[in-house]
Each structure stands twice: as C-alpha cells, then as structure tokens.
Length: 322
Image 1 (cartoon, rainbow, N blue to C red):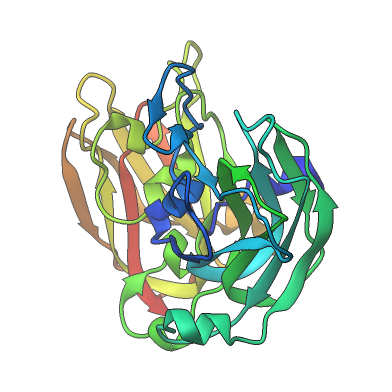
Image 2: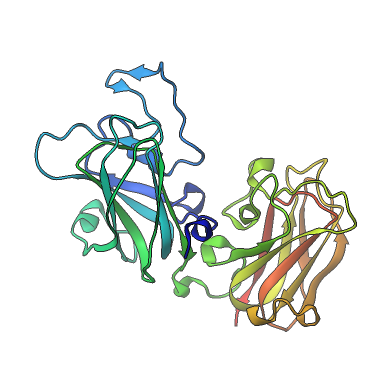
C-alpha cells in the first residue's frame, strides 16, 4: 500500500478510539501520553518549565549508558498496520536519529510487567529519522496487533505516533445486535462525495460528537446533485434500526437523508443491486433521528445520501452479523 493510501486509513492508536500510551521507560522531559494526542503538535518558543523547554510530545533524558528508550501503545482497536507516522515536529537538536516498531497480540488487559515480558515481534525494522519532520513509513505485514512498542535510539523526543491500518476487533464480541458501521467494530468509509470541512470517518467514531467539528461536513453544493458517504460494515448483516444524528449542525444540517444497502462489495457500482433501508426522509437540525428498518436482506455496505448537502454528527447502523 502506498503512503498516500495508508494515510487515509484510521489511526488505530487514536484516543478517540480508546488508544492509550500504557508505558514508557523514561519520560523525564515530556509525557508519553502526548504521543497520541489529537491534532498537530503545538510549540511556544518562550515556554520553559522547571526541567527545561516544554514540548508537546514525548521526550526522554540524555542517556549516559547503553540501551535505548521505548514507549508502549495499546491500540484503541486491535488491527493490521499498513503504515506509521513518527512525527518529530519541533524536535531539532533533540530528536532520536533512529526508531523501530514492535508488536504483540495479547488478549485481555495485560499489566505493565506482562507487556515487558511479552514476545514482541518486529513490525518496522530500525529506520533513520529526520528532525522536525513527519517521518512516514509503510508496513508490509498482515498480522493483527493489540499493542505496539515504539523504540527510539538512543533517546530524544517524538511529538506524535500515528498507526494507520484496518481494525480487526475480537469477533467474540460481535454477537447479538451491534453497530455494524462502527469503526471500533471494523466498519470503515470506502467512498465519499465531499469532505471539505471534516472527515466522514467521524460519523462512525466512538460516542456522541461534542461539537460540529467532530462530525462530517461537506461544502455547500451549487449544482443539482447531492452528497453521500459509503460505509463498509463490520461484516454482512441484517439491519434492525438506524440512527442519523445531526447534533450541533443547526444552520447547516441536511434537509433530508436516505440510507440504502448492498449485499456485496462486488456489486458496489451496480445501481440496480442497492436496496432501500430508510427512504428519503426529512431531517431536523441538531437532532438524533432513529428509524426502524424492515428488511430481511443482509447487506455488506450502506450508503447515506444527504440532500442536497450538510453535516452529519453520527451514523449508527444496528443489526446482527449474518
């Protein structure tokens, strides 16, 4: 997979998915938790603390002995890694010259000692880093990981660590009625007409949106068409009920919406194969809309059409895997 392709995939380590930096052998100058903070790293050249310059990242002290520093990240959703970004933004004279990434697949909730003793395997061999740069590396590995270990050689600062890939949740939890579209369950966006203001992937994220920026908002249309997003579900399943949430979209909610589904991805371009799950229905601004679905046909993908444009906070597609 190319760099341009994998950067479009979800960040499996993101806090919005439940990711966490669970251990670091050293975080003397700057906290390990900053590694997965949302947004770009900030920098104030005048900001100093008791231990020195304040950085928006993870920074270890200067090593005076052999070895190297490392931090362990628990992925918000286990998955297959297609590429990583090791961002050294603002670290110029104090960035690590080299890094590598290891992975492990451990079910349950391992302790720090469990992770230190785990049988780590190489995900990304040792690579050279540049300072003040988003260092991007593709990964050719189809194994599933629950935790990654970022190794830096020998020490230094990393602002952000992004882990792009495909979610592979434990199928034992995908029973009964679940949100088939949820990113945490393995759903993902495969097509979108317009993502001018914000990513359509936001609508299948965890929890409710907290403001307009945490939904999907397209540009204002000036033609006769409409905007849409296509989502591959966690697996083929029968839809029971749907939620289309326009929370925080007050003057820019869609006037109406329609949800349709298709049985297999191979039929994606065949308009005749799509079935209607929720007919075109008027939407209110800043409102959670719920719709029952009466269709026995399993679908693998759904398409949300909004008319003619406008913002959606969340889309929930509840059903059972078939």
